[in-house]
Length: 133
Image 1 (cartoon, rainbow, N blue to C red):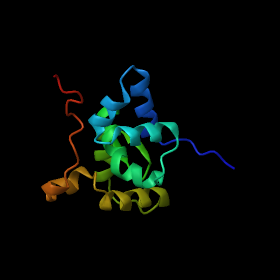
Image 2 (cartoon, rainbow, N blue to C red; image 1 turned 180 degrees about the vertical axis):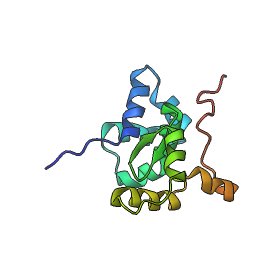
Image 3 (cartoon, rainbow, N blue to C red; image 1 turned 90 degrees about the vertical axis):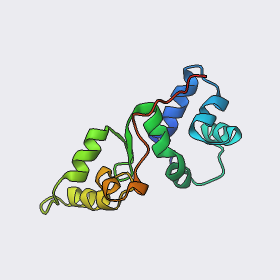
Image 4 (cartoon, rainbow, N blue to C red; image 1 turned 60 degrees about the vertical axis):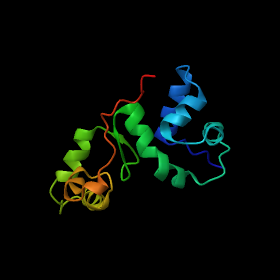
């Protein structure tokens, strides 16, 4: 059986835990139940990884990497790069760029779609990730 590597956002969670933060603290920050995060990090989470990625991937990437999770590239990219892809003209000569262009038009993280509909705005990537208590 082929072993598939974990998505980048799960590695970001592991890195936070490796910094000495508790699983409970990180779980609270991302809005996930502590037992669920524990199972996810142990590789025993029962749900499909694509569903969990859809729910938590963008938030984790924005919080711990100050990046936007690009669903097309399946990795975190700088916000400037996201804006560049979203504002790029349609490519008629490169099929991969055309697919990326089309994906950007339907992407909920598209910064220009948020201007048209404020309800679709992605969470701020510049938000303070830790509240001082």
